[in-house]
Structures are given as structure tokens and as C-alpha cells.
Amino acid sequence: MTLLLEKPGLYIGYGSVVRIEAFIAGYTFAKKKPDDLVYRGFGQWLRKKFDIRQDLSWTSIVCFVGQSEAEAFEITKELWKKYKIEIS
Image 1 (spheres, helix red, strand yellow):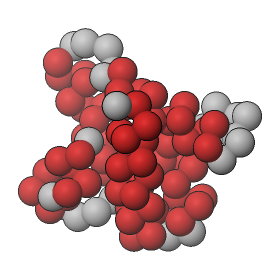
Image 2: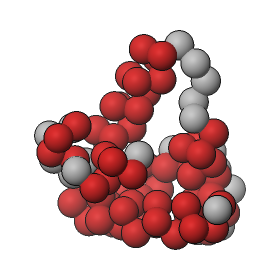
Image 3: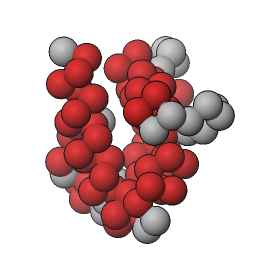
């Protein structure tokens, strides 16, 4: 996920949380293994951070907070950094 956020053009064309989610889902499917636990924990962390009790995807949360795809992407970069620091 860090590489996707740092260099989105290289992997997904441009900064898009929807494209990140699709890329990771495709990667996970191709590897035929469960979701990476760090990645899966990000959605749980966001729900706790924003006090969301519904089972929303992380993309739904950041798109709501960001109010636009571009803003959601920038917010995701910042939140991912904070999340990685907290779980380290």
C-alpha cells in the first residue's frame, strides 16, 4: 500500500483510492492468499478513529471524509502514515 500511495502513476495510473482497493483485491486474488493483515487492519483502524460503527470499507470512509477522489487520496496517504506508526 505504501508504494501505491507514493507512486500511484506507476501502479494504478493516478492517485485514486478506488483504484488502490481494486489493485489490492486483484493482487490478493492472484496470489490466492488471505488479505494482508496490515492492509485489513487499516479499515478497522479508520472505523475506530472516526467512531464508525457500520462495516464500511476504508475507501467509503476516506471518500466521505475527503469529499472528492483527489482529496480522499491525499487524506489516505496521511492516514496510512499515522496507521503504520501506531501499529509499529
